[in-house]
Every structure is written in structure tokens, then in C-alpha cells.
Amino acid sequence: MNPSSQQNFWKKFTKTNWEKAPLLLQDSASALQEIKEDQIFSMLVEYSNQCRKLKSPQGFKLFVEGQLQYAEDLLQFLPVKKDKSFLGYHTRMEKYFSDYCLVCDELLQVSQENRKPLQQFTENLFSHVGFPNRFVEMGLYLGNYKKTPFGVHVDGCGVFSFPVVGKKTFRLWTPKFVEKNPALNRAHNYSKFKKHSQVLEARPGDMTYWPSSAWHIAESDGSFSATWSLGIWVDRSHFDVILEALGPLLQKTLGLHGETKVTGQKNGQKSDKKKSLHSRDGQVVDLPQNFQETILKIESLSKNQLYDAFLKSWLELSSKQGFKTFPRQTPRNKISLDSVIQTSSLKSILWSKNKSKNRISCAFQGTVLELPPSHEMLRLIKDLNLGKKCRISDYLGLSKNKKDLASIQILADAGAFS
Ligand SMILES: [Fe+2]
Image 1 (tube, helix red, strand yellow):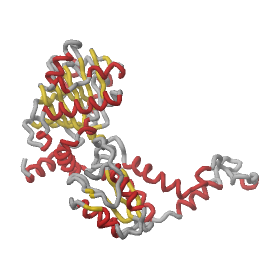
Image 2: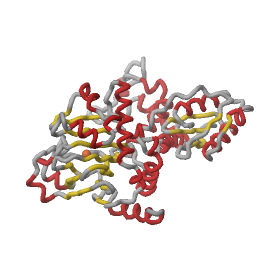
Image 3: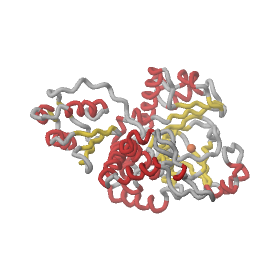
């Protein structure tokens, strides 16, 4: 898809489909179609290898005949390089199971090779619909299961699906219909509701989307399929974001006052009967002392302090580029003034000036740092973001801020430099 038809697609998608209506796009020319079956299989093997190394199948679920298997039994059934392909893996699995479904929702952890098309897709999406307040995760469903093991269900996420092997059939119902027909919730037998459903049938090369409110189940005739997906979690409200952003600021502003364990009078003071907090007829005439003090403390907050609290929250969210997780970083050697560092073209270190204090905030993949203002450090960050290879001593050699090197180490540990 050329850039202008891509923009048209996203405009139309935003207007017609986003959080509104399902979509089946046949032979979709999205950037994500660059990610082929063998690459998804390699990602799955790489993540399986990580799990075997850590002796934990976290991120995987295996259902056999619709029953969730114990995690401790799972490692032996994960894909290995020797399987060579999804079909190779299936040949091994079908010897044991006539109906199995393997789910993995942590493919982002091994997405380094496919970062570019993933980011291109999500950047386009977010530039039209906004950043999800929760995150995007990359999942995979494979097997010869006839129906999604947990029946008809709804998730907190809108889903883009990309079949890579076999045909995939999704059956969807609107939230309104399920509200009137609650028997559909977790149903495995739903024949009488079929005529009210919408069916999306997708093959490799196609893309489907359904909004977060769509109830759905996958169906198959028992032949093998493998489908990966991007789940756009939209179950976190702006209100939740605000509460989380204000928490640390309120904690700092209230100090010990926020630790008070009783309400009604100042600690250590005897109650004053004349100042009863409610009248004889039950009317509460005033707030207890500590609430009144709280009001004074909150009133003392400035607009700039609120700005900085929200800035931190936004830097954390936007520096993750909406993703839930990132590929694991191999530990980097200790950074010194002689180190030469560079960031990948897909990764920027975000930065901004704080308004309530003389500090710079910078962020990388969800790690947010506050730095003393330093022209040298800012020059370094800007050059790194322009893709330059930077010898740290060329920037910080004259810096009086000893903390700068420690900050660069934190960014290095977060995986900012290649
Ligand atoms: Fe689902």
C-alpha cells in the first residue's frame, strides 16, 4: 500500500470500524504482511527457548480437548527448532492430541527482527485513533481445535488477526445481542444464535479486525491453523491514568499527613464536644480537621506541578510506543566516558523540560528519568536521536553533572543503545 492509500485506509477504518464494527480485509497490503509464516514460527521457537531456559512457560497456555493443561506439563509440548515449521510442529502434536490449542501472548518479547513493520502499523493506527491507555500485545493461536476452548467470550481489547497457516473462521455477536441473550456467555453450543452472528473467514494474506466489545469464538473443521494477532487493550480509562499520575504527587504533597490512621481530630488532641461534627438532627456540619488540612495542602499545588505529574505519565506511555513488552536486553557493559553509543533508528529517547522545577525528564521504553538541566546531556540525547554514533566523552567530558553518566547507564540498561 502506498502512503496515500494507507492514510485513506486508516481514515476510513477510524470512521467505520475502530471500536465500532468488524472488518475482513482480503489480501491486505498492510506492512504486517511482511511478517511471514517462517518469521512467526521463528519467534515462537525463540520465545519457547526462553521459557525452557527459565523453566517457566509463562505467556503460554495449552488446551487439550478444551481443558487447560497444567503449566508444569507444558514445556515438553512447546515448539522446537527441529520442528522446522508450524506444520512440522503440528505433525508432532497430532500424534498426542486429536484436539489441541496452543496460545502464546508474549511474542513482543522476541519481536526485535519484526519491529519495523509492527511499529509502522501501530504508529499509523495510533495517529488516527490515539494511544491505547493500556497496551498492545502480540499473540498467537495455533492447533486443530474445533472451537475456542473457553467458548464465546469478549476481551478488553480490539483484535487484528493475521492467519499464517490454514483457514481461520471467527464468529461474532454484538454486545447488544449478548446482553439480550446471556446464555451466549462462555457458550460452546450456540447453534440457535448462529443466524444472529457475523462470520469472518480469513486466509493467509488477509486481516480481520473486531472491536473490543465484540463477543467472539473461533471455529474450525478440525484442520490445522496458525493465526497471530495484535490485541489493542482499551480497558483502561483516562480516569485510571489520572489517578495513577496524581498518586505520587499527592503522596509527596501530603507527606506524613497522608499517613494519618484516624480521622476526626488532630493526633493527640482531645475531642472538643462543642465542635461536634454533626448536629443533634444528624446534619454533618463540617469536615474533620485532617480533611480540612488536606484541602489546604491540595490547594497549594500549582498548575505546573500538575503538568509535570501528567508529563511523567505521558512520557512513560508514549516512550513504550503503546507496546506491552520489549525484547529482552542482553546486559550491556558498564558505560564509561570512553564508550561509543548509538540508538536504533526505531528507538528515540524522549525528553522534555519540567515546568515546576529546574529538571529535564527523559524516557525510553517506559523508563522515565529526571535529570539536572545539562546542555551537554541534551546535546548527546539529541544527537543520539538523529542516529549519530556518539563518544560520551565528546559530550560529557566537561560536564559537571556526575549524575549524567549514571543516567546514561540507566538508559543503556533499559536497552536504549545498540
Ligand atoms: Fe478472544
